[in-house]
Image 1 (cartoon, rainbow, N blue to C red):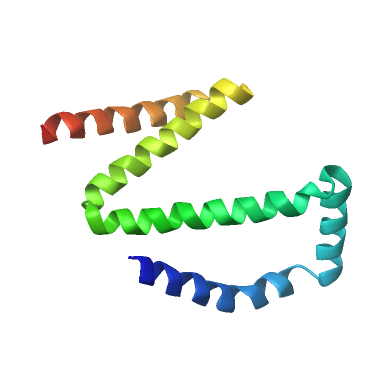
Image 2 (image 1 turned 90 degrees about the vertical axis):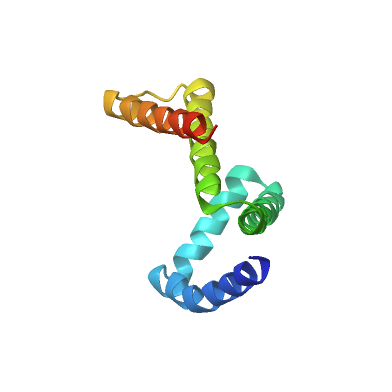
Length: 120
């Protein structure tokens, strides 16, 4: 899993970087950089570095976990992670919830609960 993730990351960087640069003109990259630096300040570089490192570690642990647990268990854990992010954003950021969003979250929670009950 770890070797697969490392190869996938390197190939993605090589393949997607030219498209990312071509899709946004270099002048737009410079304007975006200036806006970020003016709004956040010099800490912007540290925030980008920290985000990159933590995202890489998150994916590394995910691939290492797949070597130890079944894909179904991993999928259930990933679903629960997403539910916790949704609930946290609702509580912390006071995100408005539409009825269809609440229904989707309820179905995900119910499905996870039923799976855990069936597995026992």
